[in-house]
Image (cartoon, rainbow, N blue to C red; front, side):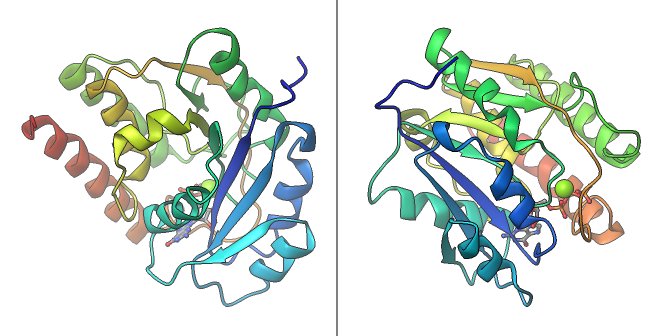
Length: 235
Ligand SMILES: Nc1nc2c(ncn2[C@@H]2O[C@H](COP(=O)(O)OP(=O)(O)OP(=O)(O)O)[C@@H](O)[C@H]2O)c(=O)[nH]1
Ligand SMILES: [Mg+2]
C-alpha cells in the first residue's frame, strides 16, 4: 500500500539513554509514511539527543522523568501542528520500525482508530519478551477483558492512534501506566481498536523496565493499579 499523499503521521519516541539504538530505530522508519519523528529525551546522560538529531528527528526535552511524561511532552509538541495519526515507538530497537505501515493500514481501510502492535501474536526472538513481561501482559489483558469487555493480547509500546481519539482520551499517566491507560480508555470510550502482529527482538543497550527487578515491580504495580482505578471510577 502507498500512503495517501495528504496523510500526516507523526512518530513519538520516548528515549532515555539509548545512544546505541536510537539511530538504528530512526533509520528503519519508512520515511514515505511519516511527516516527522519526535524523539523525547528524558534527561539522557549519553549521546541520545545528538544521535537523534543527526538522524533527522525533532528532539525535545522533558525533565519530568517517566515514560508517560515523555509521551505527554511529545504530544504537547505535536499539538502545535497536529497530525492525523500518532505512532508510538520505543527507542531500544526491539520493535521493527519497518512494520509501521501495518499499524496504519487498519485506520485507513478498516475504520479502526487505535491499532496495537501485539508481540504475543507476532513472531518474537527467543528471550525478547522476558517471562515476567509475558505473564504481566497476560494478567493485565485478562483483567481488561473481564472489567471492560475489550480484548487485547498485549500492552505493546508500538501502536498507532488517530489524533482525534487520542485527544478524547485526555491521557495523563506519567510513567508505566501509559500503555494500559490508553487501552482502558479506548474500551471505556468505545474507540474501535484492533491488533496486528508485530515482531519483537532483544533490545539493543541496557534495559530499564522489565529487565530490572525494580522496573518490573514498579511497572507491574502501576499497570494493575491503573486498571483498577479506571474500573472503580465511572465518571
Ligand atoms: N522517557 C523515558 N523513557 C524511558 C524511561 N524508562 C524507559 N524509557 C524508554 O522506554 C522504552 C522502554 O524501556 P525498556 O528499558 O526497553 O523497557 P522494556 O521494553 O520493558 O524492557 P526490555 O525488555 O529490556 O526492552 C525505551 O525506549 C526506553 O528508552 C523513562 O523513565 N523515561
Ligand atoms: Mg524494551
